[in-house]
Image 1 (cartoon, rainbow, N blue to C red):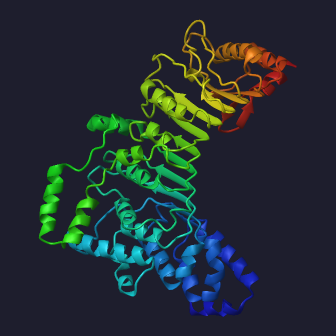
Image 2: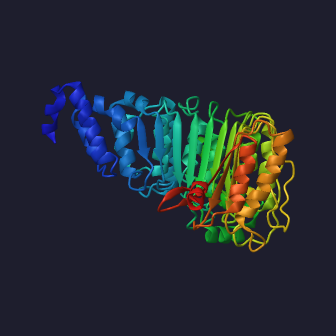
Image 3: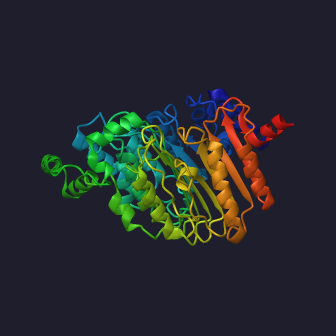
Length: 512
C-alpha cells in the first residue's frame, strides 16, 4: 500500500479519473472492502479529489454496507479530515445493528460511556482524540447518531429500518437522544426524508419507523416525505392479534413496573444527570403519536408518498395533517395491509384539510380476496378545488359490483388528467372490467358537458390482466366517447416480460 503515495504528483484530471474508476469497481458493485478508505488514508492528494465522488452521495443502505466496521472507517476518515464531512449532501443508511449497549462493558457502564461520548461529540461537532481508541466498541446505533452531527450539509435522508418490539432495541433511540441534547446541524438543510421499513420478522415491528418519523417530521424546511414498507401480511395479522392496541392507534410505552425496576438499579450506579438522561432514554413514546399530533399544520412538507403502509402501523391521517400546504399525495393501501373502509375514509377526510392546495392525488386501493365481498364505496373529490391530476382505483369512484354500475358527481371541476386503475378480476361474475370502464367513461362524458371542461386525458391501467386477443367493443366505445369530447383516451396493461402493453393499439391491429 505505501507504493500508492506515488500518485500524489499526478494531475488532478487523472486523479479524478482514478476516483471515478475506484468508485465504479469497488463501491457501486458492493465490493467496498475498505479499498476507498485505504486509498484515502494513504494518499491525501487522492483523498482530496476522490472524496466528493465517493461521499457526496453517501450510500450505507445495504446490509453489507451498513456495518459497524464501515461506520467506524467513515468516522476515522472524518476525524482525520473534519472538513470533508461537509461534502456529504445525501445520506442513505441502514439497516444497522439496533443494539443500544456495548457487549464490552456492563449495561449501565455502557450507557454512561455512550452518553458521555455522544454528548461530548455532538456538542463540539467533532471527534476527540480520547474517543478514537474505543470507537469500535460502541454500538452501531450510537455511532450512527454521532455520524449525523459530523455531516452538516445533508439535504436528502434515506433510512432503511429493521423491525423491533416496543421494549426491545429500536435502532434510533440514540438518535432521538442526540436530538434532545442538540439539534441536528443539517436540521435546516434537509428537504427530503425517505423511510423504508423492512417487513416484520419478529416482534411487533412498530418502534423504529414511528420513533424516527415522529422525531424528524419537524425539520423546518422538509418538502418531501416518502414511506415504504415491505409488507408481510401473515406476520402483520399475528402482530395485530398480539397487540390489538396498535391497531387502534394507541401509544404503548414501556410498562411502568419495568421502567421502575430499571431506574431502581440505575440509582446506585449513575450520577444524577446521567440518571435523568437514562430515564428519558427509556421513556420515549415508541409510537410518537403525541409528537406527530403536536406538529399538525406546522410543516413545510409539500409531497407525501406512502407505499404498502398499513394504517395500523403508521398514523397516516395524522401525518397528512402535519403540512401547512400539501401539494401532492400518493398512497397505496389495501388488503395486504389490512386497511379497511374506515381507514381509507380517514385518509380521505385528512386530505380534505388541503382541499385548496392539493394538485395531485394518487390513491390505490386493493380489497383482495379476503375482502372480495365487502361493498365498494365512493370518495368525493369534488371539493378539491385545485386538483389537476387524479389517479385512483376505480372502486373508490364507483360501485362496480352492482348490476347497474353507479358513480356520482364526485370529480373536481379543474381536473386535467384522470387515471383509473382496475383489476380484470374485480367484478366476480357480475360483469367484465371493460364493461365497468365503459360505464364510468359514460358518466365522465356526461360530466364533461357541464363541469369537466379542463379534462384533457383519461388513462385506464388494467392490473393483473393476462392479455389475450379480445377486441373489446367496450373499450372502443369508451375511446370514441372521449374523442368526441376532445379527450385523449389510453388503456394499458403491464406484462413483466413485455413491459407496458397498449391495449387499444393492440385492438386496432386486430380489427384491421
